[in-house]
Length: 286
Image 1 (cartoon, helix red, strand yellow):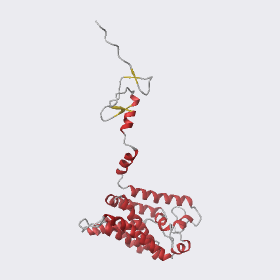
Image 2 (image 1 turned 30 degrees about the vertical axis):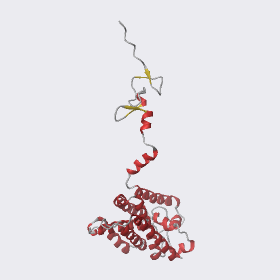
Image 3 (image 1 turned 90 degrees about the vertical axis):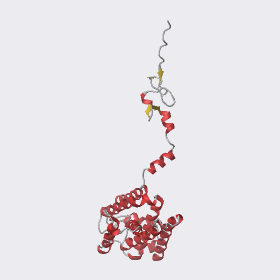
C-alpha cells in the first residue's frame, strides 16, 4: 500500500518566513492574513487589490462626483480663510482685528473698496478682494449661511462652471454698485454676490410661475432689501449692484425650459455682465 504524500507547506509570497494555507482568489499566490484584503468575492492579495483600483484621474472624478456643491464649499473656505488672515494679520494698525466695530484695520483698508482711494491707487484687484472681506463674525456668519443655502439650491442645477460665473458676475456687480453709491466708506463682504444669487433664484422661480413671496428665497430677499435701506452701515450699492447683476445673468442662464437660451449664451451672459461691471467701475473712478 502506498502512503499519501505529506502536505505541501506554502509560504507567503511577501513574507517567506510565514507559513500559510490561504491563497489570493484572483491570482492564486499564497499569502498570509496580513497580505490579503477582503474583496466582494474571496480575498485578494495586496498586488491584485492595487491593480484593481482605478487610476488617480478616475478616483478624482469619482470623488468630485460625490460632491455636487464643491464650488460653494470652496467659496466659503476662501471667505473664511481671508477673514482669519485679516484678523490674524491686524491687531491695532487702524483699529480692528476680528470682530471690531466702527474701525478699519490696515488689511481691511488694503483689501476693501472705496471710490476715492481707488481713484488714487488704481488697485483694481480690490473689485474682487472686497467681495471676500468681512467686518466681524456676524457679518461673515450671515453671508456664509446664505451662500451655503443658495449653493445647495443653484449649483446642482447650474453646474459648477456656471455657478462660479454667476457668483463672480454678481460680486463684480456689487463692487460697481459700491463705487456708484457708496463713496466714503470702506466696503467689503460677500453680500453683493449673495444678493445676486438670491435674485437669480427668485427670478428663475418667478419665470416658472411660482409666487416668490410664498417661498423662503423671496421672503429672505425682501427682508434683506428692507434692512439694507433701514439699518445704517450696510452697503446699499453693493446689494443693489449684486441684485441687478444676478438678475441679468439669470434672465439668460436660467431661462424657462420652453424657451431655453443657446448653451453658449449661458456662459457668455455672466462674462458680459462681469465685464460691464468692470467697465462701470473703471469709468466711475476714472
